[in-house]
Length: 52
Image 1 (cartoon, rainbow, N blue to C red):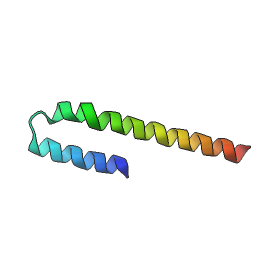
Image 2 (image 1 turned 180 degrees about the vertical axis):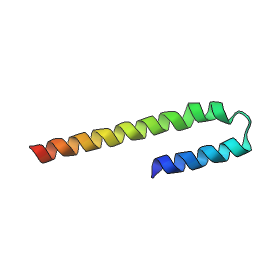
Image 3 (image 1 turned 120 degrees about the horizontal axis):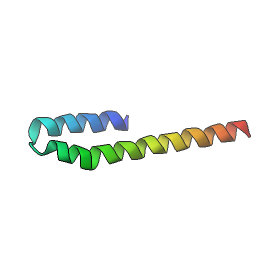
């Protein structure tokens, strides 16, 4: 869900700003990576709990 919101905001910036690509790289990409890592950690931890 957060990734969808990030993409929507990125599209909004692309249509409104000229320096949007730099903004996209500086903000949306790191946030998306952090969210993905968080999901991976949650999935792995839940699998370990289920296995144990």
